[in-house]
Image (cartoon, rainbow, N blue to C red; front, side, top):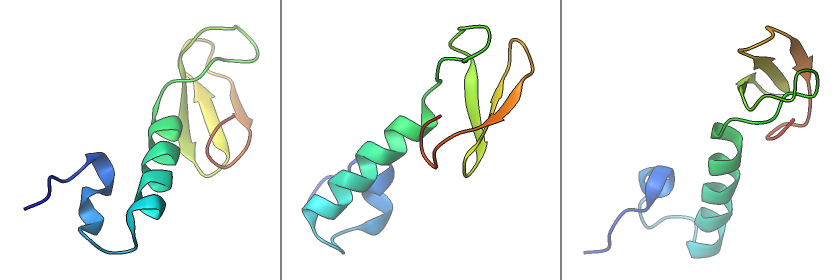
Length: 68
């Protein structure tokens, strides 16, 4: 039996290996903390698609869908 990998384990054996790997890379990038363009602290978290908030200076701004 194959081992499930990260957040893409929910797909099981469906959709093919390459697509699952791409989804895994994208999800890892979007869930990590990013650098704030205002205070330069690594405290930015994704709220929803394209909306980010810095937990240090409380600034809310827009960016790309997966990364600011």
